[in-house]
Structures are given as C-alpha cells and as structure tokens.
Image (cartoon, rainbow, N blue to C red; front, side):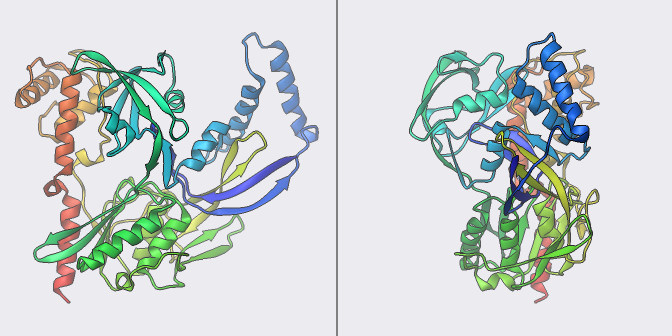
Length: 483
C-alpha cells in the first residue's frame, strides 16, 4: 500500500546554497488519498525479477535502497517530461523548504567551481556576514573535516543545522594568502522576495516593485511594499519579474488580486479530459491591500527567465487589459505538476494539468509576448560567477567562454566566445587588466575573474544601462501625461 500526499504546483529550477536549496514551485495543497499496487500482478512482476537478479549477481557493491530509488527515478525519467521527476527523501525535504518565508542556516551562498567550494556572498546582516565570511573565500574544512570529494549538496547539508548551534568553517582567503577559522552560530534567515522603491521620472513618481519569486510570504511582502509606495505618492506601478522562475499559486493569485477586481478569472486549469477550472482572484486572509492599487496604471517587465507563476501574472494582465508588458518573450511553461508523497519519504512530481490565460491561451513552449519588445544588453542575461582558476593561451574551457562573453559585453572585443583562449582573447584580457590597474599578464586568474565580476555587477546595477527599465518608465510617463 502506498500513501500519497498531493500538492499542486508549477515547478521550474533548482539550485543549492548554504542557507537554502531552492526548487521553485507554484501551487497549493490538495487532498490526501491512498492507492494500492500489487508488484506481483501482471507486468509488475518483472520489476521484482530484475531486482532479484541485480541484488544476487551484480559484481559491483550497491545498497538496495539506491536500487529502488534508481527504478523510481527511471520511471519518472522515461516520461520524457522535464518537469516530471522523482525526488529522494532529501530532495523532497529541500522541495518543501524551498519557498518558506524563513530558513535556519548561516546565510551565505556557495558555489562549486573546478572542485573548489567558493563563497559567492554572505546575506546582508546574516550570521556569516557578522562572523566575517567574505566573497571568494574557499571552503576547506567543516568542523575540522575536509570537504574534498564532497558534493555541493553534501557540503550544504553539513553546514545546516538547528538554530542556536554552531559550525566551524576553515576557509582559504586568496587575497590574504592564508587560512582563517570562523565559528558561526546558525540562526533564522528571513527570505525576502519583494523589493520596492519610488523612482522619479521627469517629475512623476513611479512605484517600482521587484519580485524574485512567488514565495510563501510574498503576498504579505507585496502588501507592505505597495502600502508604502502608495503612501509615498506612487502614481503608477512598475512590476519587475525578470528572471523570476515561478512560485506558489496562492501567492500569484493574491498579488494579481491586488490590481484586478475581486472575483476575476486570472487563469484556468485544464485537466487531461480538457475540462477547465477557473482560478479566481480572492481577498487573501489577513491581508488588506490598498484599494488605490486597482486604479493605478501598471507596467510589467519580463524576460526569457520569467516563467510559470510570472507568466500567469503577465498573461492575466495582458488578457484583461490591466497592464502593459515590456521586455522580451517569457520562458513558456504552461504545465502544472502535482507532488505525490511516497512511503519511503520521497516524492513523485508529475505533470497533470495545463494552465491557460484568461483568454484560454496555452503559452507552453511559446511564452507570453511583450507588448513592447526591448532587447537587453547581453550582460543582463549572464549569471555572474565566482571563479578562481587560471587559464592561458591555447586552453579551452567553459569558464573562458563565460569570460569572453562578459568582456564582449563590456566592449573589450575578445574576438570569439566559444571558450578557446586565442591571441585576441589574450589582448582583451590584458587591456581589461590594465584598465583595472592589474598586472597585464594576459592570463585569466582569480584577480581577473574577481575584477570582471565586480565591473559587470557595477554595469548591471547602473539603471542608466537598463534599456528595458528606461522604456518601461518612458511608457508610464507618457501614460500619466495623457491623464
């Protein structure tokens, strides 16, 4: 007998960090039910046969639970759907934790690059920042045990723990050329998904609000942010969901409901029989949005990284004529998944529905087209990395290709972006190093990569370089001037 707990969501990406291992979802909880399958009946008997053959005769050592999990993963993989998968008990735990409003940890993001575990950045105000952990610190030991041979998931697991307990990290700090020991007490790390501010545009006040994902507490954060924007005199709302890969259904429904009339259909769910179920805006329990929000002009910015719940919001605003979309075509994910909990603690995530816009459009594989198409500088599409290795002429590597793309976006003309380190790339690197007052070695080393990331962050952080933002603000200014 297999007991399954169903939870409906729209899923997209997965990445690991010390404070959190994130799987981006979109959904609410459904009812529980039980289903029984006899492994001895019909074609299921061959599964037992294969299991017995492998466990009795395989020359390689294996754990029986790994064999079972491999079979479960294989059944999900054979569907051929990138959004249907099997999650182990550990993956399922991260899955549940993914969009929680807060998590226990030390508050730092870590990445693995060429066998090294490198700190990307500590969260502002987190235990790791207070303890002195810095970007580019290389993790060497956790509680006096070396991290050699561990996976990123294993490193994250060892650093996590209960609130109030401590973890001792030994890091190598390249710029100081020495090892440093830090004892960090684990604490609750708030997860903020909403940012906001007033942007002045030629005498007009535009309320900018950014959504990184639709998390557990996003609706409450949205309320606090929009209340402040209205109080500060916002004349229009600019929503930024660029790079937002999705989240919970209740979050996007509540946020859409803040700018749409109550009882408005903002999307449909379609089952395997083609039957449609309307998703209607409702007043969230315990949340009272400022009624002024429903009257303000709305513009939404999106890009190819805007998916799932982000597309539900943009599709609703577009179809209902409530908002103007600026940017590029969104990702195009129009399926809905349900998670089904298994008796071993793992979960099966399965695509079971389509979702449609209010005009019953299925955007899967196509995305939501922007009303005003604005192509962004390629630098804005790059995930800026922390790299610490050294590369020279005649080498070939993905890290070199990454650096070539950044150099090209910064107008340093490396000549190619395929990862082969040629003479033109060397000259571009040397010129960049000279401009950064580094030794012009022409080699890509840790100092070069750090300076490259810092420069790219500065360019991306300067709103004057954000062409999509400029066009969105211009459109809103024009719309307000016509009033």
